[in-house]
Length: 185
Ligand SMILES: Nc1ncnc2c1ncn2[C@@H]1O[C@H](COP(=O)(O)OP(=O)(O)OP(=O)(O)O)[C@@H](O)[C@H]1O
Ligand SMILES: [Mg+2]
Image (cartoon, rainbow, N blue to C red; front, side, top):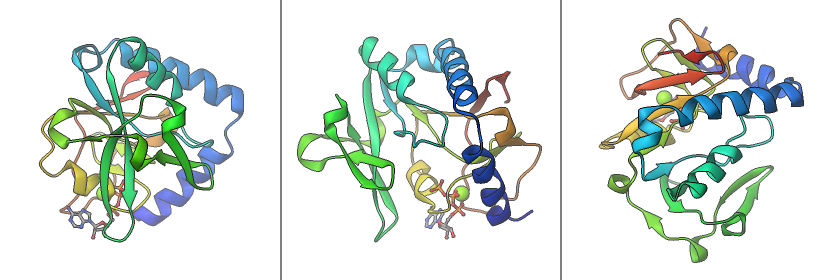
């Protein structure tokens, strides 16, 4: 299957997931993430604000705040496909930019530089055993990961994993992938 075919297939599976199932598995995955060394050591995380059909990251954001971690979330610039992370201190720092997609409001949030982030939770639609991922196709994370030095962990439902996926020269694999069943890699 091509990247495009994988995206279509997995997006369909995410959309058709039962709400209870999504919530329960999201909680399980969050609990497993909190036990990792990467989480426990981190002081500043980069994480996406999940959309309705995705693995729910809101519990992770809350937990990070509770533990006094700095939470930063992406602001994307479609013109040059660049992305930056900005500090999120509350939901009021976000604005709805498209459908159910939320991003930080520039005037309310401060820029967090790439070297301040020590744990980046890298999103994706599907992941393989080598850490390669297929995202939504913007190349935003591949660009951002160039020169990023901190840890990378991805979280996903088990059906978002595959043995081997197509990848290109610019694709950068993640260090660790966790699902509701534990460590995938
Ligand atoms: N480091 C880079 N510099 C310039 N262009 C890049 C870079 N990485 C990826 N791209 C471009 O981005 C496009 C999308 O890449 P890809 O199909 O791997 O997206 P993706 O990994 O699914 O997206 P994302 O990183 O946003 O999750 C590619 O066609 C490629 O040309
Ligand atoms: Mg890629």
